[in-house]
Image 1 (cartoon, rainbow, N blue to C red):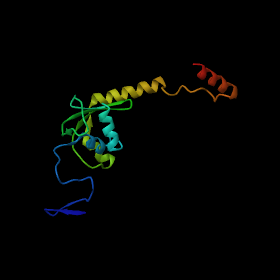
Image 2 (spheres, one colour):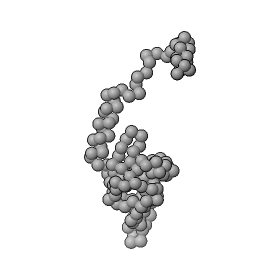
Image 3 (cartoon, rainbow, N blue to C red):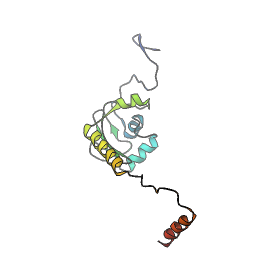
Length: 146
């Protein structure tokens, strides 16, 4: 335990800050909220146009504030988030989830897309068995001829 100014007791945790943040860089917030594994990946996503803040474009150094809306794309997922809190340090997943709220429309759309992928069997169209030597040679001939 760590004592703070007025003799109140506060747990000593790295992700808890006593100072109140007003704004923070977009790439730092995305990393702290665990949207991307590294800050570098967050910056690449922003530079690649996969992140929008308040309906407009975004740069890595753009300042985000509480109440801003972020729309991001991760693979096939599309997330619409509202920023509830700011943090410049990456904490546990439970703490990171308190930094934002996903809109209901976004949750429904993601659930629908997941169900569509499940029903279509995407990625499950494997052959019933491995090709034997003769079938492999035939496949190789077909690939080389085209």
